[in-house]
Image 1 (cartoon, rainbow, N blue to C red):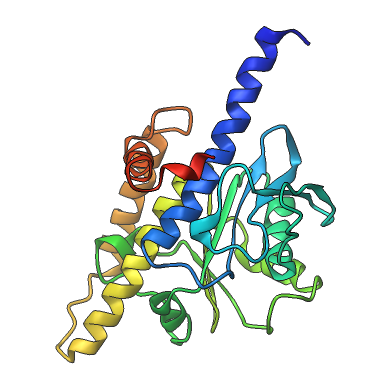
Image 2 (image 1 turned 45 degrees about the vertical axis):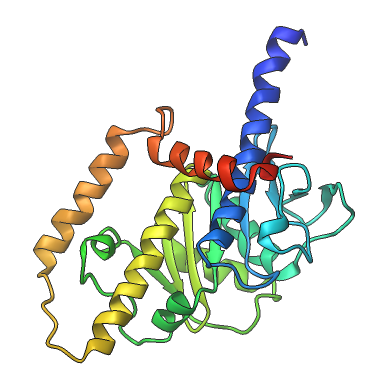
Length: 255
């Protein structure tokens, strides 16, 4: 293969690793990480059967484009620059979705305090505000089965997720999927703020003004139209803004 063909593939691979490292750093920056636990994964551009994930034992603020681990859908390590390995619970969740959903490029899972709190509520996430209405009728739920070490759970997890891109892992946390890393991060950012806002409203003790389902559905469709009008092949100004933030405050994430 000639150099002219190799160049864009190399650039694509670098961008994929950069974006995933950026998502790890941003999750930490906004306080949504949980020590060395939870995960963000993205398909490796060179091979759709491989995906990238964080090296085990590293805090999210330590993840870089260079130290990401590449594994396949069977859990075999393809590339592990620091010989750190990977978290088995992360493999269970992320491999299940990458295998079942070829439309998903990135899977992002958190254990934030607000997200875990909402996951413990019987009603789950409510469409109380504009952020939350993005997810109205578009949120899946998966019952807690213990720490995700049982590979048999993968079948139930993907069945519960279906074709949705947002899932509440009951008594556990939140999970989102995206066609790009940037889309997944932005989706989680909105989901997290929805959870925080719902808890703040509940804590106020005041009478809640809840929009009706028709308005919530209308707003969700507006979000979908925005996504459709700004396809993944187009520029993503919001994600680019986040990358500029990191370039200013944590420039080593690309290393």
